[in-house]
Each structure stands twice: as C-alpha cells, then as structure tokens.
Amino acid sequence: MPTEHKHCQCQETQNHFLERAFESLQLENAQRELLLSAFRETTVSIPLRPHRTDDDGGELHTYTGYRVQHNHARGPFKGGLRFHQSVNMGEIRALAQLMTWKTALVNVPFGGAKGGIAVDPNQLSQYALETLTKRFVQKMGLVFGVHHDIPAPDVGTNPQVMAWILEEYSKTHGYTPAIVTGKPIELGGSAGRLEATGRGVAYLTGKIASEMALPIKDAAVVIQGFGNVGFHTAQHLAAMGARVIALSDAHNGVICETGIDIEQAHHYVTKTGWLEGLPGTESINNAELLELSCDILIPAAIEATINCDNADAIQARLVVEAANMPITHLADTTLCERGIMVVPDLLANAGGVLTSYYEWVQNLQEFPWEYDTVMLRLEQRLGQVYQQVHDLAKQGNTDLRTAAYELAIGRVNQAMALRGF
Ligand code: GLU
Image (tube, rainbow, N blue to C red; front, side):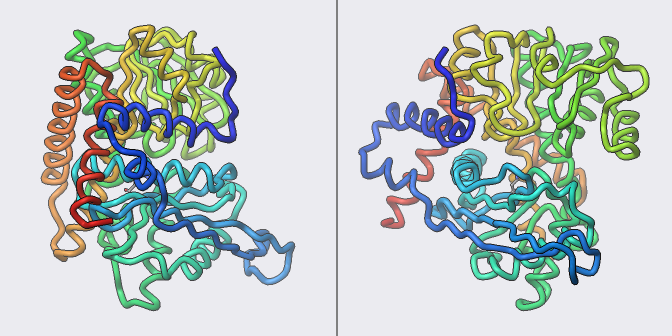
C-alpha cells in the first residue's frame, strides 16, 4: 500500500470521498469547485499568560484560533470548536466541509463550519481556559450569530466551554442562549445533548449489526477513545447487552475479555485522569487495541487512527466511525475490499449535530422539550436517514459512505442552484 502523509490526510481523505460522489452525480467542474471552496476562513491570535492564575505576569504565549465557514446554502453555519494541540487550518478546513455534508445528510437547516484553538486544554488551569475561550469569542465575535454561525463542542471542549462562549457573546448582544449548542441545561441546553452523539452511534450500531445477523447481545466491542462520545457509546452499547472488551484514551488502553464495567471505568477516569490501572483489566496500547479480534470496532478519538499501517490487521466485522475521519481513504478502500462493513462518520456520529439542531429550535421557541421527546426524535431521524442511505447504496451497488456523500452533496448543490450562488 502507498504511504500516507500525516499532515494532509484529512483533506486528502475528504477529497477522495468527494470525488467518488462527484463522479456518480456527474457534477461539472465549476460546481465541484464551488462545493469545495470555503465561504470564509478566519484566523485570530490570542495572547495569554497561561501559567498565572490571575493572567498578570508569567510567560506570554500567543495561541492561534480558527473558524472555517464552509457552506451556508442550506442554513446558518454549524459546527464544533476543537481545543487540541494538533489543530491547524488544513484539519479545520476538512472538518468544516464534513459538517456541511453531515447537516445536509440528516436534513437539518444548517450549513457547515468548524473551528478551534491549537492548545492542549489539559495543560491549562480552568481560569486560563476560561480567559482563552472568552478572548477567542471577543476576536471571533463578528463571525458568530444565531442565524449566521452557531458553535458547539468537539474534541477538547465541553458544556462549560460553551457556557463561557454564551457569556462572552451575551455581553455585547444581550442574553443569547441560541448562539451556541451543547451548553449546560441550566443555560438552555437540551436534555440529552451530552449523550446524543454516543447514543446515536450505539443506536445505529445495534440496527446495522442486527441487519448483518450479528446480535448486539454479547457482541464483542472495542472502542478507541473514552471522551464524551466514546463513553456514551460504550454506556449505551453495554445497556443493549454488548460486551465492551477494550477501551482506550489518548494515553493507553485496557482490556477484559468478559466485558468492562463502563460506569466503573468512567468513575475511575474521573478520579485518576486515565484508564490505565482500571481494576479487573489488563493494559494494552492503542495500536494493539485497534487490531484486536472483535465483532465491532468503534474509533471514537481523532483522525486517521485507521490508516495504511493497520488497515490489513483490523479484525472486526463492523467498523463504526464515531470520530470524524478516523479512517483514511486508503484504509477505507482496504476495509471495503476485505468485506468489512464501515458506517461513515457523517451518518454514524450525526446524532450530535441533530440534537444541536433540536437545542437551537428549543432556544428559538424558548420552550424546552422533555428528554424522551429528544431521544425519540433523535432515533427516528437517524433510523430514517440510515434507511435512505442504505437504499441508495443498494440501488447504486456502492458503499454506505459514497451513498451518504451523494445524498448530502446533491442537497447542497440543489440549494446553491436555487439560491443562485
Ligand atoms: N462537533 C460535533 C460534530 O462534529 C457536533 C457539531 C454541532 O453540534 O454543531 O458533529
């Protein structure tokens, strides 16, 4: 297999998937170019003295913040903010595009965007993180708006970060809960939003596994990543009777063939910061974890973890992309050739942005929904979207990813044409 260059994998992977769909939709070059280009890319510098609790003294550091607004043909720009040391413009650009296709696929009236700051949030005090977030909003304030661009959590951010965004934006615009989704329930967040991405992943995993005659009860599941998405996916799959045999975080993994107690693992991580040493488990590294013999493998961490170095060694029957772009295009081809079923990110993890849409609607209506209403709508919509993608894939004799891209790109292209972009 050819080698892959880590720094440009995201864009390369995205372009490759898009090209396949462009071909089958028979789009002209001008349409392709327009679909690929971003509406606006903003970069800001954020000075901060991160190691002083009062931000007065200590060493000055300048952080870089990004927001790429890819496409808004179908509605306001929508997408998460990522705080991670590896954040760069190329990655954010590719992830912003992915949001355009994801919102179109689940048919919510949003476009696509993504942003972030190149920072390791674990190295900062809460005070420094709050200051950094609020300064980011001061500088980016002009690009955000309730009907223009609505951020949300992503890797390294959480409801608390969203609360700081809400606070900073509200200073100049008045109390504006709809400016951000994934915020705490006390500030207008939606019931169920925190677990929504993982819940959606688990729901689709169960549905697709049963169609493959792979009963979810006692199925051996391996999950890479134990952040918000990984944890809630594990929690729901365990509740459905699956046996989660291995889990990992950015550091290391743990394995227990009879099944890990997910609540215990969560408590342990909250207390110690890491999975390593979880009672009743043995240690395993991230590379070994991905190659374990299992029924279902769920990459729920960052991009390109399944790549041409390990695609041949993946032993699962079903791989569900809970993370964004965890499989490079070369690895995707290998998995398909090997007959491994892959559920693509824009479908698998769309429960997050779908519930963000429900949150935004509740904020605009100033009328919160019950938890059960949110969950019912989440599962119903994901089930319908999966059926559409499945039928299209069958009809075109293609894979779920290509069908999902075709459906999404077709919708965006149509909206652009109608609006005369
Ligand atoms: N960051 C999540 C994603 O990649 C959620 C985005 C949102 O809710 O706007 O889908």
